[in-house]
Amino acid sequence: MAGVTRWAVLLAAAGLCACSRPPNPVVAHDPIPQPPPGYAVRCSSTPFILNGYITHCTPGLKPVEERVIVRAKG
Image 1 (cartoon, rainbow, N blue to C red):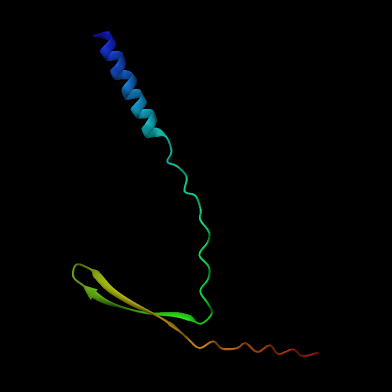
Image 2 (cartoon, one colour):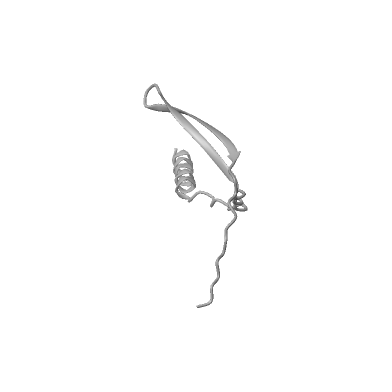
């Protein structure tokens, strides 16, 4: 009977040790690149039952405005 109790205590201790270990760290992947300058998304949402929402998004391109740099000596 003492052998069974000893095994039960050992198994319980092993289970507690396994649960107390921290989880494996998340390995970072390559960052997501930025979208191109003319990329735009239009989204609309509609109320749904039980405080839910239905969302619909359409990707598109917006006109890219060229930036003008004014330099003056002063």
